[in-house]
Each structure stands twice: as C-alpha cells, then as structure tokens.
Image 1: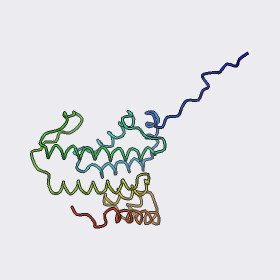
Image 2: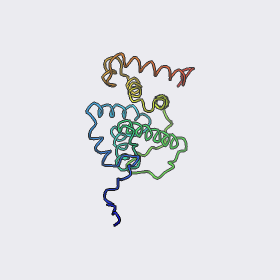
Image 3: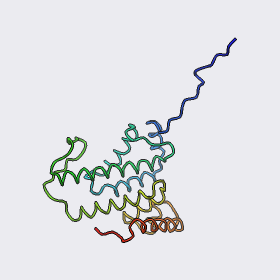
Image 4: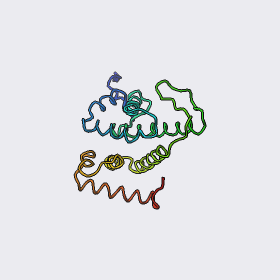
Length: 197
C-alpha cells in the first residue's frame, strides 16, 4: 500500500517581500516617536518638490501598502518608508526641473500632483535648497542600512542640536558623538574640497 501525501501540509514558499497586510501591521506598530521622526524626515525631503506637507509620507506609505514599492523582509519598514520618500522627492525635483527648463511638462498632469508652471525662473533660494537637499540625499545614501547615522544627518540638516538632536535620534551623547564622527569621515571623503552652492 502506497503512502499518500497530504497536500495541505506542504510548507508555503516564503516571499522575499512583505505583503500589504504585513506592511499595514508594521506601520501600525510604529511607536509615536517613530511616527514623529517620519514626519520630521518628510519635512527635510519636501524642499524643492512642490509637494504639500503629509503628501510625501502618505504617498510613500500608499506605495508600500499597494505593492508599487516592495519592502524586503530584511529591511525595517521605517527605513523602507524613509528611502521611498527620498526616492519620490528626488523624482519630483527632477520633474520640476525639467518642467522649468523645458517650459512644458513631460507627462500629462496628474490630478493628485500639483501642476508647476514655468512662468518664472527658479529663485536663488530655491536653487540653494535643492542643492542642499541633493547633498543631504547624497550623504544619506552613504549610510544605507545605518538608521542611526541617517537620523543624525536628518536631525542636523533640520537645524537640531544638543538635547533636541539626541531626543530626535533617540541616543545618548556618547552614541551621538560616535555617529557624528562616522558621518564626518564619510563627508570628508565624499566632499574633500567642501561644497559650494
């Protein structure tokens, strides 16, 4: 008599990415402190995008939930949302730059996206903010996977110092000093001659 195999007991193959229910659960599980950090990070990334407050964070979370952006299982959801916001903001800046320099949008306007008119050239202030955002983004990309260093960079770029910076990052002074030292080393290598707007 041959043994029968119960098909129902065959283990399912684990996927490499979180599904939408897991993303929703992970977002709900974020602490109040993490949610405040995400809002602060969003504010840092908004410059030069033309997006309104909360729009960038909302867009990043929607893309993660809907599966337009897939969150790998080995990446914390908060770090994934931060990287998604950075990517969206970068694309929005590029799109605005094309619209301003070409004088015509490359794509049909989306009702959810603000339409940018190229009636006036960019101001020196907006150019400086865009360049600063690019530099912050460039330095952040050197620390992919190092959430603590990324939080320090975002905190400093947002004008936080001392106690406010320690609370924003969630570390003591010794950990903050060590993170700043790591960031300085990388920044000196990446920008040996400094940077000029």
